[in-house]
Length: 317
Ligand code: DON
Image 1 (cartoon, rainbow, N blue to C red):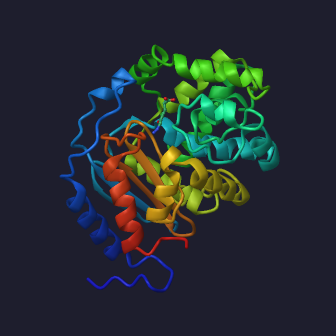
Image 2: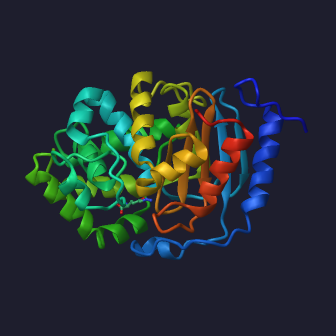
Image 3: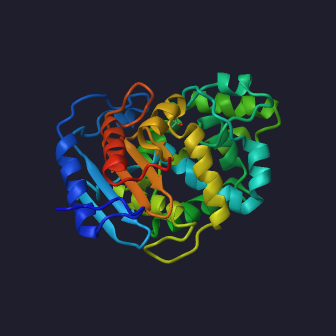
């Protein structure tokens, strides 16, 4: 099939579907990487599961493979929570309280806080993300959690449910995140009780999604904050621009430069194997495959994003 990508638009829906099916076949048998094991509930996830979903800003959804398998969203929640916080407190306050610079360090780095000028990092790494969760509107932890869960659900276009097994597993092993939240307090960069903020962040990471959900969420960022499937305006377009900026600077942590070099697009990974790539004005790509590289990014997810960025002409540069 002739796929014309030279006019700055996505090729025909048939062509996009064929391309994602070919891409799935190409990387299905890649056998590199390993499941995250520092959260015990993630260690045993089936490594052969692999789904690719691309949602166009028109609302057309293309899927292949395991796109309806639930998994915990983990760090892929971070851009959407940041979007909700920007909407709630304004983008200038969000940048001043959370930071926007690249850390060049792993997602759970304590050093990233110590090395920054004022304790701010980036909302795509744990320190900035826990601080972001602490900024959710509400007078109690329950109200803050309800705000975040509702907002994340609106990005997905359906009510997202907590995976209790993952939540409890992570709560039993998240001493490092608790330490990060307390340290942020010493810089006046924690905006709620640190233990409760870590709990809210852990719940946010334990929400179950599918690759299809993530693709619709990513497409909402590509579409100026309007969910292209439900038609709901979740956040203002201006906030999507700031979210995409912090995804570029730290979406793939210390490998964010390599990622940008390879895809030319904002991306975000999660430790359970989910990954999103946003092509502004065109669509949102999501993948699910649990084996990760050393930096905690899905191996098949990265291969897919690079390949499709090239084949669909998505690179922003
Ligand atoms: O904070 C954590 O450790 C996890 N809930 C999320 C980390 C994560 O997804 C890192 N991503 N690749």
